[in-house]
Length: 305
Image 1 (cartoon, rainbow, N blue to C red):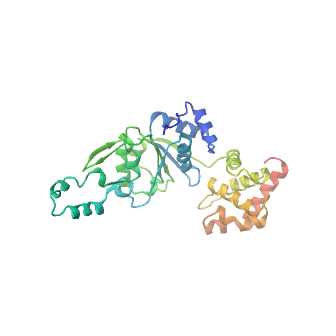
Image 2 (image 1 turned 135 degrees about the vertical axis):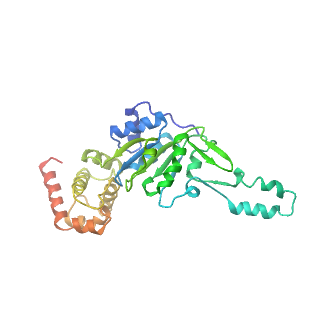
Image 3 (image 1 turned 90 degrees about the vertical axis):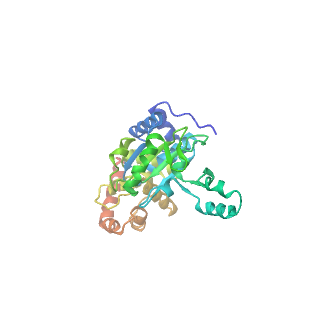
């Protein structure tokens, strides 16, 4: 499989992302373009639901490359992220070789590549890859700090050292996207190996553009009310602000309910699509939701929406 050519400018990057359904600000398009051109990992930080993970998925589709995803979590270790040895198969081979002339030879061959189980990181730098994949290291802030130290070799040299085999190095560096929700700080040593961009919540105009692309069946008036209401929610002191993912999900939910405009009853019954914590729902429902809805409707009537 021959991958598509990389975009040759920031504008071309933004246009190609848009053609695949991702509305990117120029600053984000610039960061993506430079990461592709300089073959540097791109670290994206921001609130959950702002489209960080979606960048990697869109790039894989846009460039027609495989997507390899490493979902980080507390306790993530080498065997789950890079590789492990197939001990069951090794033991089976030992049993089969017992009493045979092959036993001595097998003892020197127990750590041959055929016994190796590659995980996401090793798959991404496999020199046998026909094309360089897109490697998504998702929510790195959820992993423990020692795992970051292991990543330094991978991100600096695009290689992994396996003591029993030696160094495995990529012939074509993968396109690396790292995301973080900033639940903890990423170490400076790793940051220095990456380009960086903060992904913020979109402005109303850009969110409306996203909604038109992702939920094209939504009527214009409803889409504007949805965006205005969610923009208002994000100005409140909530534990978890709704992201773009919730905007899209709520729009689809309203269409499923045949709601063509926002009304108090539908709003109250669908707050759980937007807000994922009971304290936030309790904060918004009732008078606060009614106040925000009145503002949205007043703006629409005045023609400023």
